[in-house]
Image (tube, rainbow, N blue to C red; front, side):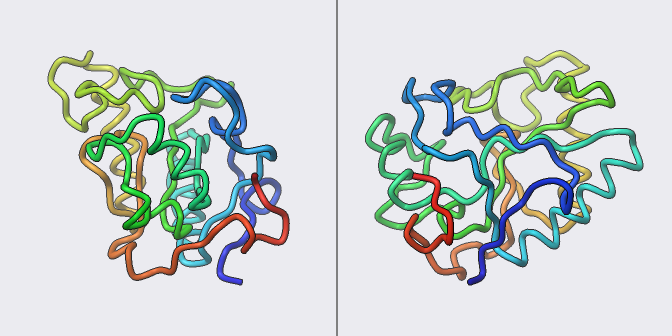
Length: 183
């Protein structure tokens, strides 16, 4: 199994999976269980990002990571917008365990201002959007620097989304591939 579970104490992150709650674009939970998984190679890069963030006094808060193909269909059926969601017929980097959606939090556990919430499917979510405050732009740049220094690629339309380079080379997984599923 190439997907491994991510969470404390092995990974010093906060897990807050949006799709395990109603606080997502569907307005209802998609995952029955808030478990976080990544491909082994992604987990190595996440560890590096955790260390880089810690040096700056930050931690990472994960909104989503591995997303079963079944969940990708739920999202696509709600909002089939290829600017923000991968067409499940072609597969998402999330459904390969090769992507993570996250933000930075400070020592008190407070999210840094990023200009939009997670899953804000508008141009305000794009990297380097000049309409954002200087604080939000700086915080996005810090997150971008941490993640790219750790070996991640970014998606220009979503400040929160990072993925392995050549993510489509990894196989797609469904929920049944997990020892303890999400759905």
